[in-house]
Image (cartoon, rainbow, N blue to C red; front, side, top):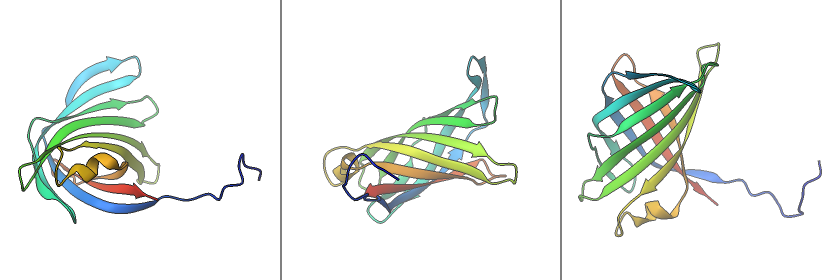
Length: 150
């Protein structure tokens, strides 16, 4: 295969940043739109922990969902995490979920984090990806977040 440059391909590696369990309200239908079914799921709380930070999921966030005609789901969640030292981190988690016929699913996300200056400012300096796992029948989900490293 021919590539555009002779530079070696450097594959990124991932480093575990944190995992969070979210408490959720039932989904509220927002109606059919031109791209599919729309709904919103309020986030009421939860907790998170990782090697460099831990704390609680603040209530008030929400997961906006678009379910396309082909069954693929686009999730756009916006919420805040509060660390044990009081810092508030804003998170925008954009997830793509593609269910497979065998019961498995593709569920990965791009996670944007905005932290205040200080001990958690390292979150502003990296790209993050994540996974999503339903904890049904409980109204909870598990998100695991990883930084991309060179």
